[in-house]
Image (cartoon, helix red, strand yellow):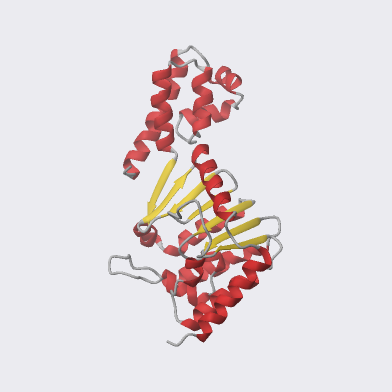
Length: 285
């Protein structure tokens, strides 16, 4: 499915207008509909004016309360699912400064209690040492947008303070490839692995590694992060997709648990990371 910002905005307006029209056609006030849906009247108003994006479950509750015919309900539910998908390109982030993306992630992390990171290709920024972050935030191909690397790196480093907030829990699930993919020189790679081993000792952090030899009944398609059970971000080469449909979120939670069941955890994962650090130091450039 092609995701275009203009179409997203139009579909969200269409959804708001359709829901308001159905309520008015049913002869219900916003207050009466709110009672039927067990929602606040303010929430109904914000949905109908487009100031709040309803979840698919919200739309289902409204349609049920209005006794909307099945064929109309199916179309609006499809519209709601499309409206609950966001896409932002890395080019768009680069235009305003990649450091702003780090600020956005910091805000998201500060409002989440349980975060699950699935990392089949590379460690996430919360686990980076500075030199590794510099490598990953630098341009890799000519078509990559220009960016202020130093400012983005510092913003990434600043984000890592959230790991010391023990009211929040983090699970970082990496593949062996993500650990060993040589994104920098051997000294930086060794430091990166040793740092992850240290982070794994934090009481609110679980760091797990799926070894290459493990038999895994699934394919690691994308990096994704689950924030509580309210949204999922999925990384692509060109940008990032945000999913809010509860069915998409529960699907990714189920996938995460499947992959986690194949991983080394606790002391075994820490030992694996320390061994990887030693292996990098034995390499010759």
